[in-house]
Image (spheres, rainbow, N blue to C red):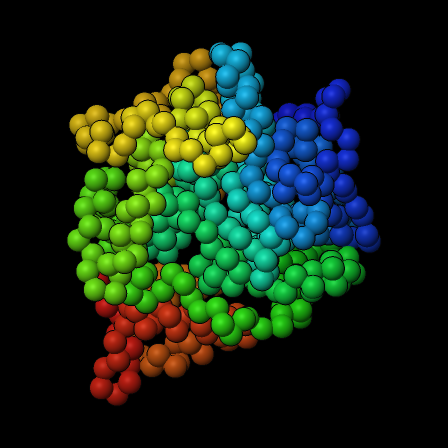
Amino acid sequence: MSTSPVNETIKELPGDEPQDVVFNNLYGLRTIELNRPNKLNALNASMIRKIVPRLVEWEKSGLANVIVMKGAGDRALCAGGDVAALAKQNMQGPDGQKASIDYFALEYKLNHYIATYEKPYIAFMDGITMGGGVGLSIHAPFRIATERTVFAMPETTIGFFPDVGASFFLPRMNGAIGTYLALTSNELKGANVFYSGVATHYLHSTSLPILESRLAELRFKDYDSMEKRLSIIEMTIEEYATGLPPNEPVLLGGELRRAIDRCFSKGTVSDVMHALKEEQGPTKAWAEKTLETLHQRSPTSLHVALMQMRVGRDWSISETFQREHQIAAQFMRHPDFTEGVSVRLSRERLGSTPKWQPASLEAVTPEDKIEVPFFQVAEDVPRLKLLTTRDYDQYPYRSLGVPTEEEVKKVVQEGTKTPHEVIRHFIEKKNGRQGISTVVEEILDRKTTTEVGGRAVWNDD
């Protein structure tokens, strides 16, 4: 990832809401607090225009050591973008749709800047963290979940697609978990946000204020590398770990996880649906419920999201946001977005069934290829110019998260360790961080067998 200057000035405009974001300085700590608690800190353009200049200022400052993103109140970091305002704009015709497209350009510039930021950045995913809130947190080196965290990418419920960089982070999750979350819009809560790898750490919410104070006291030497600084922060966060809840087992594990990989690794929506119908045994009820869920989602959204999960794994972080901007522009002109938002959020239509176009999954055949136009470049939508030219193909600090299946597979395939030794290897590698043994044990139980003599052997399904 190369250093580059910020190539655009973003600043507040007349009419922007006052105090919708609160900034604070304490020694070396800089905090961004989203301050619309009555709207679950939903993100709008006014907030983005305040956040970007501060991040730019702090990145240049030798006094700013650590940046924390958090939400006001105890209910949400950020429940998403202000989609109700966007849907209202879209109803005004082409000019309103252009304004909505411009909003996504602004949001994605912020998301990319966070993803390539060159100062330690920590997201407190305390409370609801969905949609636009995920864009403010998922690309951070440190993502802290609490007992109140509710994570989801709920876009298929409103006739949209998982954006804010979901094309990058969801396909890079273990197995078919990312595709499953993208299509179903299902939620992860509490410790399972950590177990899934969405969060890098888990703390009780009451520890966050104390952690902030401790982070403010950290001092780095001028010559400390980014890796050194992140290592110090990692150890500091772990000082406040009080254990994972014992009554919250790994949700996306065992037989359920096998079923997710079987069904959601398919290349077409019809194949996914067929695989779900074929499920038997302990996952049959789950499959039936999942089929019901998918039938409630926008058919267009499902087809776009599945293709997105397949092609996004090859996009760089910069290309991700530039491609997503084009896809978002297409959705602002498609009736499903305004329809979905109206049904979900307007009092007049709350509880009614959205009238999707096409109306149902059965009305779409593979030959229709309804997803293809969303991945074509719209001539009247310029290529998104990001704030910097920084880029990468894999998260540079992904080692700060929980062990991935590929990492566990590599250690097992060395061919010398017992399951206990594999677990011990990762506990030591992560300096004894809580929850690591649980994550690795689930992977080993599902993906390995034990030979005579105790050696673990990897089984590719």
